[in-house]
Amino acid sequence: MVVLGILGNATVILVIGKSVIMERSVVHNSNIIIINMAVSNLMVSVMRNILLIVSDFGIQLFLSKERCQFLMGVWVWLRSVNVWSTFYLSVFHLQTLRRVAPSVGNLKASRGVPKALLLNLLSIWLVNLLYSIPAHIFSTNGNANSTETLMLISSTTRPLLGCVWNFPSSYSGLAYATTSMVIHEILPIVLMTGTNLSSLYMLYTYGRTRSSVQDAPVAKRVPAERRAAKVILTLVLLFVISWGTSVISVNYFNYNGGTSSEFLLVIARFANIIFIALSPAVLAVGHRGLRSCIKS
Image (spheres, rainbow, N blue to C red):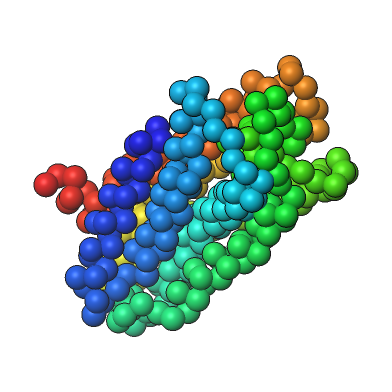
């Protein structure tokens, strides 16, 4: 699954990135957002999931405190960026649907990459970098006998490379875990569900009134947006299933920890990889450039 995620997301970046470079005069904003999501997926796979595979083969590595603090921060940063990049894709599609019906002028692709789009994507990376600062501070290195009593989906679901959380007290650790659960685990799922339900409702409304639409470009655009909505909805459902499984498993461990609940962490680890591994396949079904690349 990890190898599939790396190869799939690398292919998405190369194929769509090439089309963006070759067609500089007309840039589709959705391609930039998809590349951003694929980059975050790829970086999570390279920086964390490969290390999980190495550990599964029985190779035990233990890092220094400074390296553990660096990696824990990077894991939290990349995982959080991955979540909000996926949400941004669903928000962008909803905004696109709102511009489809009223006027034909808004149907054109942008000439060059819009600065507002780049600033929004950059803000996702910068804001989540700030959020990851506590992971640099409240983490340390352990040894072969170290056990983790607090888990965060954003970082890791076991003492990987001997790196463990080191909060001043159990209360402060649970406070951080609860804040992370609300902001980066539950809230994205709720928002993604809301945006996609809104998108489906708007497409349903357009479908009922399509016969009365006078502008031919608008009438042609609705079926295309419906196909895009199906792809994005599938991505979001895949994300909600994988992320939701991790949320339930990890937080049950945090609040009802014990040896009897350790199997939930195995489930969480597998669920964390599902979205990253399968999202390129979903995109390949709905993206014309990726389909052409696969067929060739």
